[in-house]
Each structure stands twice: as structure tokens, then as C-alpha cells.
Amino acid sequence: MKKEWWKEAVVYQIYPRSFNDSNGDGIGDLPGIREKVDYLDYLGIDLVWLNPVYDSPNTDNGYDVRNYRKIMDEFGDMEDWKDLLDDLHDRGIRLIMDFVPNHTSDAHRWFQKSRKSKDSSYRDYYFWREGDEKEPLNNWDSIFGGSVWEWDKEAREYYLHLFSRKQPDLNWDNPDVRSEIYEIMNWWMDKGIDGFRLDVVNFISKHPDLPDEHNKGPYGARGTKYYVDGPNIHDYFQEMNKEVFADRDAVAIGETPLVSEEAGSKYVDPSRNELDMIFQFDHVTFDMKEGGSWLPQRDWQLTELKEIFTRWRKVTSNTGGWNATYLSNHDQPRMVSRFGDDQDFRRESAQVLATLLMTISGTPFIYQGEELGMTNYPFTDISELRDVQTINKFNEMKKQGKINNFDEVKSEIRLWSRDNARTPMQWTSGENAGFTDGEPWINVNPNKSEINVGAEKKDEDSVLQFYRKLIDLRKEHKVLIYGDYKPILEEDEEIFGFLREENNEATLTMLNFSSENKKLSLPSGISVDGVDLLLSNYPLEGTEFSEETTFRPYEARLYKLE
Image 1: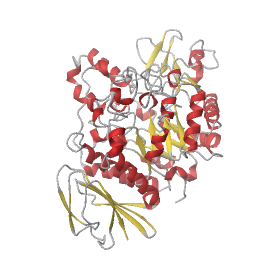
Image 2 (image 1 turned 90 degrees about the vertical axis):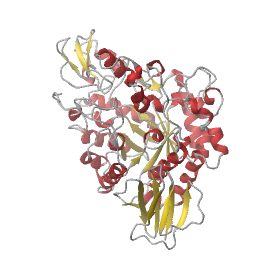
Image 3 (image 1 turned 180 degrees about the vertical axis):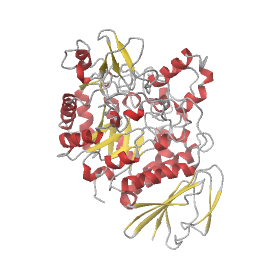
Image 4 (image 1 turned 180 degrees about the horizontal axis):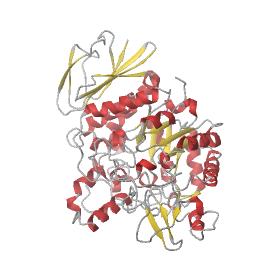
């Protein structure tokens, strides 16, 4: 296995709007992040992923880019950004930018010029189509609700948008579009960043005929068959690699929703020169019922989750590729509310999930607040929401007569809404959790008094301190980075266990995913001789793994094996 800095890194994802506000306007900003760089260093972070900070009208919180070369006024300016980069690099922390290649804002100058005339040199930058004003051109559903087609009164044509109508899709079949995108990416690279996270990047190649699709996908949306892992996607990735990444010591990370195993294995095959790692979505869609996120969580089995992690490790290892490992991010519920127990065993289950994240193979991605065990928010009214996806779907369902009020979907919104992950970072137990001196742009979770950085720094048994220990162990034991992944107890519905092995070193991770005591015998073939306990989230007498061991509710143990 080739050694790479990005394989050894622990990544921390920052959602700037919700991280730290320096000027009291209620919105997080770049100077606010600078104020917390020492915290990132304290935690042991090697790489920061910064969600979009480009100039934007904020229809989708920065994923609708108006100007890729300008910083959003609410966040600061380019000097603030450069100061942040310098502060991070001074502490040995690298920075990757979140880049949006699939679409722009409808306020972007390219789109404004393209709608002016059919003869505009920018017309083919987007998907413009003639049609009947009252009849969309195909039956594709926007991921944010409604049709993917929007009638433009000025252009007198339809344009395509997979997400919000304020986010028109770029036409990557146009070489001028690709050239412009690569130029922008190189412009940021020249400023000293260490790579990109590429937003929904496997959506950039569409089927040229844009045909109807009659089966709805995991998001309840038709059309995915014709733009996920599209016909020219590998050509585009190889071209991007050549034009942007080939001669740089930088990392290319693709967000690839609904990616197939065949495509994913090729994306990360080092010999193909496409991407370095990808975010696959199987483990964050498997617990959804058919029809998407507006239904209760499906009853799921631990064996399903284990199978997904094992399968994707086989997919990538077959080509010598690499995994990006995550359990939550800005688009997903808080992981302890989804996969753990955020009531009776919040601390313990958060530590179990942390152990999984840090000891399974792949580069671990921590989403801000995850290291504190932050939870979903108890929303009581649609007015508390800010997420365009949630608000659009709520209004669409009301208009269709499927619901009458918020209470009818309250439990689903409390579980699935992206705003669960976007409530402000909880720094202190004080007003607004120390996030801002002003009125926060979105409500602070009321559990800030017990879940916050200040309190957890003082508590040696806290989730925060457990993360620090795990990060230190990962750096100390390279087997946790480069070791082969070998699952054990694959049919057990309560214990998630696996080995990591490299040369003469091995570790054993054992995680109880239940709220009950679990008696377990050591798996066959693993000797109890010379077993050392590296870390546990419960106090243990002695360090050896006995012939029969009882795991307490949401207990996590990491052993070193001879």
C-alpha cells in the first residue's frame, strides 16, 4: 500500500455558517474559524474540509455559487481566507476547499449571459431546451422537490436543475465549461490549498437524450439512472486529474451519491488517475424506507451496516484504492441520533461510533460537533427550519394535500432534516452556546448546557476526550491506517468486530451496538495470549480479553494483538 499524507490524515469538516461567529451578526465566519484553530490543533486534526465560502445568494447555503473567486461577504474577504490558511498551515494542518462543479447559482454571470440570447456564447454552458411552458420536458424529479425543469420567462425556454431552481446544472459536455472549471480550480490551488472535496461530482455527466425514468430512486426522485455515474464521467475525471491534480501534492475527494460499485472501484483505482477517494452513500441510505426521507426510519439490522462497510472495503481494495470513512456530515442527521442512543446512552454510543470511525480502514472524517456527541434538534415548527430541501418538500406536500400541518411530519423532520447538523457548534453552556453574541441564524440546540466544548474539556470521560485518545492511537499505530481489514462476527446483530493486520502488528475492535449487556466468547482463531487493551469507554480491571467477556451497553474496546 502506497503511503500518502491524505491516507494518514484525520479530517475535520467545518460548516462555516454554524462554527463560530466573530462579529455578532449571528452567522459564523472565517475570522471566527481562526479563533478556533488552536482547538483543532488540540483535537489532533491534520486536515480541514471547509464547506463553501464562495460568494453566493445562499439559496442552498453556499452550494449555489455566484462567484467562485470571491468570498461571501458574510464570511469575510479573501484576506481573511488567506489568514486562515496561514494559521492552519502554521500548525501543520492542511486545508481543502469544497468545490461545486455540477451547478452554479442562477445569479452567476455565466447563467445571466446564457439566458440573454440563443446566440450567446454562454448558452450551451447550461441545459436549455425548447418546450411547452406548461409541460416539463421529462419526468425527472428534483432532489429538492418538484420537476428538474424550470421555465425561464426571459429565455422563453426551460433549463435543467437537479437541485433548487436557483441552481442550474452546468453542461459538462461543453469543453468550454470544463476549461473554465479547471481554470478556477487551478486558481485556488495556486493559492496554496491542499485539494478539493468535489460536490455531487458523479452527477456532472448526463445522458444526452435526457429520457424519462419511471422508477424512483432512494431519494424518491426519478431520473437518477441517467445522470448518476453518467456516460462520460470517467473521461471527465481523467481530464480533471490531468489538468488540475497531476503535478500537485493534493487530494481529490469525490462526493458520489448513489455510486455503483463498478464505477466507484474505477474512480479510486490509482492506475486510472481519476479520484483519490470517494464518499459512497450506501450506509446513509440503507435505513431509509423506499420513498426517501419523509418516512420513519426503517428498522435496520447491524449486519446490514457491517455488510456495507465490508463490501466497500473489498470494492476499493480490489483496485488498490482508498476509502473516505464518515458517519455524518452537513447533509446527514447527527450520527448519535441516527445510529446510537441519544437519550440513555448518548456518551457511550457516541464513543462506540467514534471507535468505528477511527479504527476501521480509510481516512476518517469528523463533522463539527460530532466529537462532542451533539444530537438532532427537537424542531416544533417549520419556521425553525432553514434548509431549502426540507422547506420545499414540506410546502410541496402541503400543496398536494398529503399533510395539513407540521405535527404530521414532525418526527420525520426531527430525524432526517439537514438542519439537524447545521445548528451552531456548542462551545460553552452560556448564551447561544458561545457561538455568537447576536441572534443566531438558526436555533442553538437546548442541550448546550451539558454538551459543549468547555464542559467536555474538563471531563476525562467525555466524548471529546475519547476522540482525542482515538486520534492519538491512530497516529501511533500505523496498522490502524494501512492494515488489512478483516471482519469477524459477521452474523452477530449486536457486536461489530473486526481486525486490522499489517506485518507483525494487529488490532481488534469490539463494539456493542446494543443497550443491553452482551456475553461474547473470543472469536475462534484469535489467541488470548498477549492481548493488550489500548482503549475502552468503560473502566476495566486488567487488560486481557478473557475466554468469555461481557460487554456493557454501547461498550467500545480496542485491543492490540501480538
